Each structure stands twice: as structure tokens, then as C-alpha cells.
View 1 (cartoon, rainbow, N blue to C red):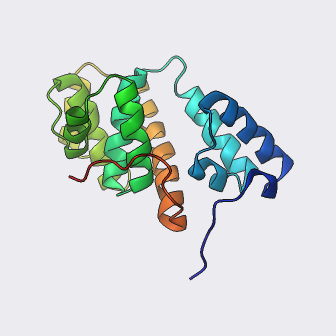
View 2: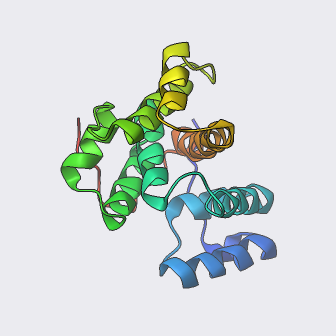
Length: 179
């Protein structure tokens, strides 16, 4: 099987190099996954633009978005995204124990748990949520805008999960705890 390697920035086209320079100035590094997605400047731009758009005027706080990222990455068994989003979730205020509870789908806050359960249901069922999970989501106070944004967040995280699944590039974040 062909081995996919993480490209050096200089190996990528000018558009990807420019995008990754902006990532490096913002994050202090270029994550291996971003560099690898940079093989396609269009895919890299689309991913980052979608991430940015979904963080503006969002139904979800940055902390809630990390919970969504964690449960989707857990469903998809993505070691890379679990590592990165566990670290980010902790930076947003979750404890290590809370990140594990989110990944197990056992979070104690009923409103956030409704989101976690729906995200898990959508990711597990190739987009079609269980009706009970949808009903609980709306009963928790979420609306149609939140449902559409949740679906977009799941698709975005699934994209990065799938890139890792098909490249198996080295994880350059501290490993998430096993559950």
C-alpha cells in the first residue's frame, strides 16, 4: 500500500503555502493534518473557511463545538482528531474527565448531552438520526438553525477524520486517553 507522507510546506502549491503560513502564524505550528490536506489547496481552503463560518453567529459556543468534535471523532475512531480536540477542549474549559464522558456519550449537562447524543446518532447512522435523539434535541431548546449547523459540524469533522483514516499520518498532538 502507498504510504502518504506529511508534505513539507515547500512541496505544496503556492496557494496551500500561503494558507499554511497563516495557520502557522495563528497556531504557532502547522499541524500534520493541515499540511496533508494542503496537497489540495481547494480542500484546505474549504475546510478552514467552513470552520471559520461555523464559528461566527453560531448556535454553539466554542466549548460546545469541541464537544461535538470529540463525539464525532470518537464515532469515527480518529486518533488524530481525538488528540487535537481533547487538547482544544481542555483549553476551552473541559477537564480530562469531562472529555472522556463526552466521548462515551455520558455528559451530565442535559442540554449539551442532547447535542452530543444527536451528533453521535447522526455520525453512527450515516446522516440519519434516531427520531428520539432529534426529539430530545428540540426539547432541549435547540432549533432548526442549530440542527443545520450541527450537521455541517459533523460533516466537517468527518472530513478530517476520513483524511486521517486514509493517510495515517503521524499524530502531532498529545494522545487522547483510551476509553
